Amino acid sequence: MFKSRFLLVSISLKIKILIIICLFVFIVISCMVSYVEFGCANIISVGIGVGKIMFFYVEYVEIQKNPQVVIAKPNGAKDNQKKYMDSKGFIFKEQMGSMMFFENNMYTQQLVSFYLNKYYSKWIWR
Image (tube, rainbow, N blue to C red; front, side):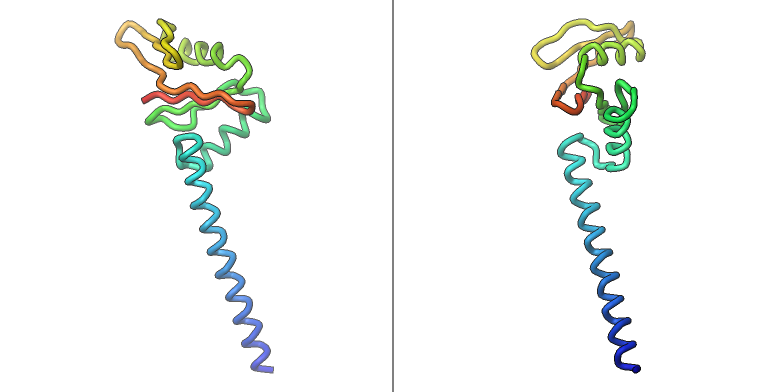
């Protein structure tokens, strides 16, 4: 009786340790994928942002402040980007390749990266 109870506790503990290790590995891999794909290691922020643009009527979501990273719906991404910058007080100045320049009275801001795929559009300022 004592031997079987000890064996059950030992197996139960091993399963708990294995689950904790698997969960830790999953979180680390998720953070790495999030950082590589979105430039933001916060998987919660990225998950909420992607969920909002895919399942709700939200045009764009800012997922990180420094460097600024915004994800948006892919349909009409350039128009959404111009609306976003208008809401921040900037006016579209010019475009050179994939770089877009916006300005207000004080200074010019440069959008360095504009990425578009079937599911989302990603804008990064540096």
